[in-house]
Image (tube, rainbow, N blue to C red):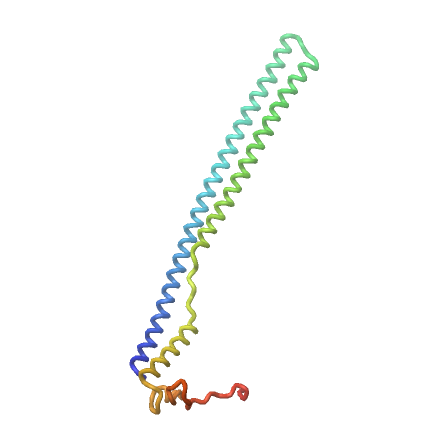
Length: 199
């Protein structure tokens, strides 16, 4: 075998190794990016959850304050009516109106909290989508095809051997059964089997 042919085979092998190394590096970068993106998403979701807890606590505090104010107003009316010696439907209506205001306030607070939770859920979905976009922005390493590299190496070795060593009688190519004339336009001594007769 001609030294240039061996060099060609070696180059092909090194090329495959280099492509494999590039693939491994690209895959490592992809995995690091994926970890960073999911960590970032997790931190954002933790912040969103913390805000949801704070909003729920704030709303609970407001509802508690509203209940205390409603109870104070109701009791004030009861005491005032008792001291004045007044009773009846008017006093009952005022007490009922105080309770209605409290319930309306509770409803408003509950609706506000529900709206905030809906917004926070959308923020979580946005954080998930952002993480997926970041992950998908980097391509994964694609393992080079060994078969393609082997065929390329064989073709390169054949071409190099043909160029430098020839394929005349006694050459490496001739010893493999690939000897004969080198002219692409002339007759070749290589006889390929007929596909229709092979079984």
